[in-house]
Amino acid sequence: MLREVSIRSIMSTDVLTFTSDENVRDAMRALLARGFDAAPVIDDNGDVAGILSTADLIVQESQLQFPAVIEILGATIKMPRANERFERDLAKALGATVGEVMADHVVTCRPDDTVEDAATLMHDKSVSRLPVVDASGALVGIVARGDIVRAIVADLAEADAGGPGDGDLDEIITETIAEMGEAD
Image (cartoon, rainbow, N blue to C red; front, side, top):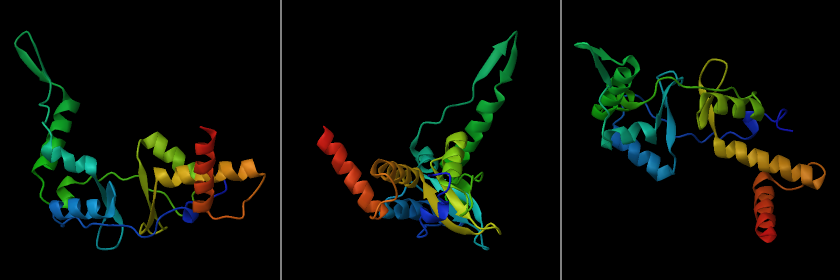
């Protein structure tokens, strides 16, 4: 049951990380080389300072939307949130270092949190990955949506088999996918 499975058992510990002073172009190349769409940014203590995602990087090639303004009776009113977004996107578009481009508000979880806890956080906060940090805030791993889905599939396979299976997670997933293909 996923309420009892800890993140520790499904998280990746081989985590690509960046520091805020790294070059954005180098970071893009590193993400592509590893096949990732995001990676945590850590400070000198190993604590998570931000996260760099491909969404942050494509701003440099996008057409920025100028802030909306309304003119009423000769008065110009700027829409505050639109102006904030424009300023943030402009800074990212002009950024040369990871620190200038990264998102600095990061949702994290702990190794002893459950898969259910992580899935809830991802859903509620609309994030696709969670850096996993220890009690002192140091990065110890990362869990992505795909890790959660693999855990769900494994849990379903166990339930279908009537209990814990003999195979490892990858074997259970492979068998489940094969069974799904036979059903077509």
